[in-house]
Length: 575
Image (cartoon, rainbow, N blue to C red; front, side):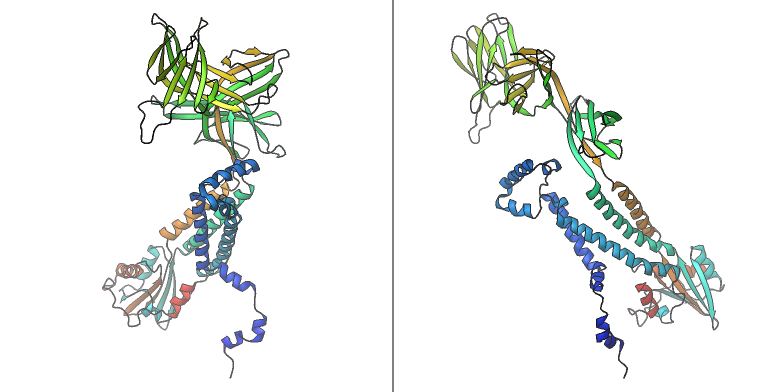
């Protein structure tokens, strides 16, 4: 007896021809595997949202990286080490996440290539005839009295944009009608769109560039490595901020100039919603800060610049506002007093010399630690004042005291903008405290605390020379946060979005309809293929009614073999 096909497939000769790539192909074309892979990537993306991700500029410096990880270790404790090894702080840069994306890209590619031939065959060479049982067992079917005009059904189908082919066999007319056959390519377009989405993401990951830079107004900052052919210098000419009467931001933008090889190549304006573009790079307005101060230090004899920077003064130090009146009640001082020494923890001190006199007061500000559950009525600070005569007076917020013929009032509490510089090149290798503040009239000044020297007060634009060195406060400056980005995958995303919209539109708004008709002198039978959820059977009956059948709209009783499928539909379903 001849062996069956299954037995032949299990024969040693067949096993010798076993293809090792077949299991891999089946895995990559498996819907279940694709769903698991998408779920894996979705969980990874969720982890990247839930857990803090290491900023790009931190990743570039090992010292900053270790400092950042130490901060996270304080939050997550013993879990921080395993989390770092699993790259949970760098999910979107991790090997496992990007490997998952790569496998998904390959899987979608294989599925798309594998799916295209049967789709193309079903469009170009659909079966024109089905067996007789299909008209009785198809999921979408209708049967009704043949219309008086035998050609009416063909006219109705063509009116509804069906392409109709007709054959006659043994006196029976058979029709094959197909509408929007090309719409089945919408599925292929959607698969291709997903493929291009993934490709665009990988291109951006490998070839894209992003850097966040903070550039002070009137200064220049390099972008990209100096060895890169795209190396640029970006200058912030001006930062413009516009607010309403309540201080809410209406607009802020930065005027930029881009230099390459020492020459200007572009200039323009960057806002949050309208970035400046040059040579494939976009310059997004990402942030701003008004906590900048320009400081220039020169040799007095030669004018050679020792230091010329805009310092970001982002810290705050408490500064009390004092109002001092003389015996006649006239105000002789009204302003904030910047701290110039720190004799103890939570204490900041300064000296105040009354203008046009030699009377000097020593003032200390102590930040009080409120008792548990206590809500302070005013600022949690206490002011200590020592007059020229040596008497000590303690004031709370809003209180006044008579000190050596003057009345001193603790009027309010403010803060200076401050920054500790590790050193001032050309002047000292020790730390220097830099503070800026504005008086009641809005005039800005800088206070420098240099080692072993008296505090140096620098009004804006008024240089001062000490020990052969000239210091000049150039005034407050704004910092502009600019995100420099190059996204070569952006064009992929636009193409993929367009393809996805076209594919979804074809799938949902131009669904393919295929039907077969058997027309006898007494009875007409229709059966078709459409979405299983579509009410195509009702549609077929309406076609019959429009063709002139008197009973087409009457529902057909269920066939005895309902639920089974004819060979024709099974074949079409596989296609």
